[in-house]
Length: 241
View (cartoon, rainbow, N blue to C red):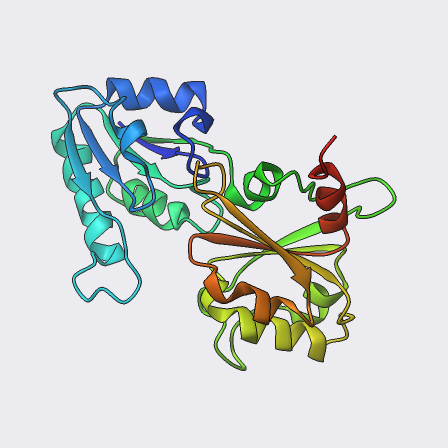
């Protein structure tokens, strides 16, 4: 049995109870780069831990096909396998591809959902993704491949939705801002960047579409970008008193 487990946004305490049970029972654990040491310490002491994390720009990082092959291999040779993935496996985590590889190989698998950084990231900074009278809808986009005309992002929708959330986008921030402005998002729209969400070194940068590029010079991945008036609710909640 292979369990695709969401590890949550970073804080080891945010894995689900079911996910933690699976981790403790596994004899093989394949984990992502952003899974913290504190959570890995919860694994069975006799388990084999395999780092399959992908680091941007690293030519030695494992390919997705290689990871799929490892899952199939250990799915056939080990009794309990956990694929530990940051956030939720099915939210820009390529969990669907891994599940399909297991299914095609005839290997039993289960999906154990995780707390997605798309929601937990803003929440860790006291920013709700919806708020009555402010935002009745939100959308989550990956900016990982947002480089040009064929980036696949519906920018008109992103500019109109009350709350737009971008994952893996800090290195594309200038592009994101320009596309939102190009498609009609007002320059005074509030923007927040939450880095290392839920961890002790979490940081928060708040600005607007017309100021955030200057403010975000020190922002680093992993970051969640929140665009919309809900950011002002977070600012109010973060006031002292």
